[in-house]
Amino acid sequence: MRVKNLRRDSIEKQEATFSEDVRNTSNGSSVLTSPQSQPDDTSTNTPSDSGNASDSGDLTDTLRKARRSRIRRRSLVTVVLVFLVAGIYLVNLMWGEVVYSPADVSAVIRGEDVQGASYSVGVLRLPRATMGLLAGIAFGAAGVTFQTMLRNQLASPDIIGISSGASAAGVIGIVIFGMGQTQVSIVALIASLTVALLIYLLSYRGGFAGTRLILIGIGFAALLQSVVTYALSQASSWDLPTATRWLTGSLNGATWERTGPLAATALALLPIMLLFGRNLNVLRLGDETARGLGVRVNLTRVVMIVCAVILIAVATSACGPIAFVAFVSGPIAARIVGPGGSLTIPAALVGALVVLVSDLVSQYFLGVRYPVGVLTGALGAPFLIYLLARSNRGGNI
Image (cartoon, rainbow, N blue to C red; front, side, top):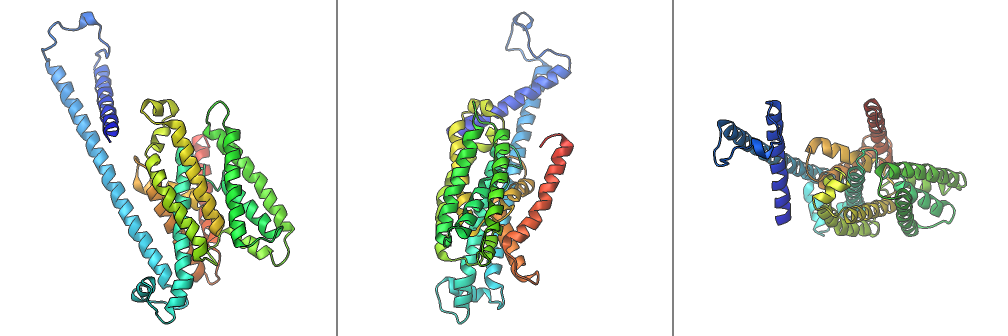
């Protein structure tokens, strides 16, 4: 905390000094003054010096007020997101072929026996809603980690090949080896970690380069997609629906056995990501600047990549690669929260909200029940096109 305060005070002083120097330069005075031109009596203050000191103090006060305003906005948005996620989670438990009251749902959660609701809510809806909540949190937090660290909104696990590794392994396990759900989950987890390690090693040549990692990841995604296509072409008629549904991303068949590992992973890794996530925004300034501000660049990058990849891998192994949740959560959170501070918690909440709302709509409001990944893909694809078009107009991707 002491180092953090010293760093913040130093930045404020540098900003104030820089603004004062800019004003002096614009008034025709030189920022650098030779020793001969300085007055002998350093204790004498001219009216101009007093005015500059006053302006510097006003600028510092303005910066502090702006910082407090950003903190208030971030806190308010986070609280609103928490209530929205809790509300949608409750609606998912209540809504279905039979609508139950909040009292019935609460009684089931407390372990009481409620006729009809004990099975519908306790066995079917509660594991499904909990898996959707945890998967959205995992995808959202991991996605914004990659986007912030690589300084590119397109650097999502959906696009740079990490999710594709789990998809290819899962389909091969289902179609070719006839694996069950538990085995498929384990294989998908190992494949995601392996692909992420290969991408990182191939992109690390004389130092870390985000653009190189993104391009290599896109190449891996294309390669693995061809593997998925081949595996599906060899699938039997009874394996094809299972593989397709898993590829799309679905919460069907959610159980506590599949939800438990995801919950344990999220509880273990999210605090670590929050601890190291404070330095992610500093890494956006460049490695040298981050080191100058006291950030352990390599340690922060490795820890955040490992945590994000494990979250993505475990979530994908539990419910399949739910399309575009990791991709859209970060930009949406950044837009509503505003600049400054870590986006890990807001993006995780946005991801949970996207998954829960999409699952509710795809199950009960479209006439036909679809896997949740169908709706998230339909929402995320236009957003990807928008980002590409905007980047192209700006002259970079």
